[in-house]
Image 1 (cartoon, one colour):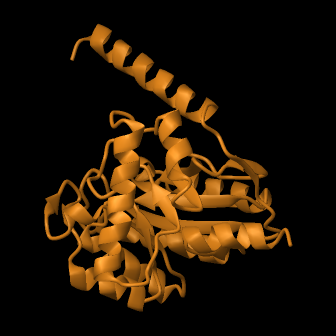
Image 2: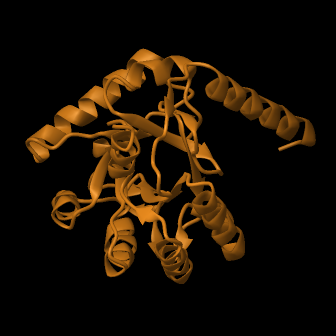
Amino acid sequence: MSKLSQLSLRMRNRGQRLASESFGRTPVKLHNREPLISFSFDDYPRSALHVGGTVLEEAGVRGTYYVALSLMDTEIPAGPAFTLDDLLATVERGHELGCHTYAHCHAWSTDARTFEASVIENACVLQRHLPGRKFTSLSYPIAWPRPGTKRRVLGHVHCCRGGGETFNCGTVDAAHLQASFLEKHQHELDWVKRLIDASVQARGWLVLATHDVGNAPTRLGCETTFFKSVVRHAVASGAKVLSVGEAWAFSQREAK
């Protein structure tokens, strides 16, 4: 790719991010009196549960697994995807299932109506596999969401998560919560620890995200030892470590 093409791509991405952050917002105040931390996994490769989930459970906490149910039993860029048995085990082991659209829709390239239809389809398929189970949070696949998409999908879940590399504090956009992707900081454990400490000091809500976890992770995931160190620091930080849905409910319940 030429330098001109790279510059054009960066400018386009910057414009999409600005539009996504600025429009279609649903401002909601977080009322938590205690700092919160959540761990989440996008696309749900099997290792996210069998390695990452085990690490969380050994620390006494649980995470959120964002599933696009069309990916079940397939090979995805982050490794082998979840199976039906994995879905059942996720719930039985106390973790949360979150929505990632049924078709793993590109959050910017997909028009808002199609994206919403895929959110609805994902919920319907979940009901077939796990009757009575509902998604309460959503993660946008691949890219920043369109403003129109943000307005539509919030009617189906309580909150939606994107990226942003920071924590949530004060008044937030319920349609686009901030998160930090651990794979971007694979060799920056001190940076991640400082982010955790800053969020705790601000009594914020930090959502940490990744895909696969293992000794030889893909470019989308993180190494097991690194993940264990992050979980250990999060648990020791004094924050309440909750799934995304639980943290959202806690931040709103505290207002009552």
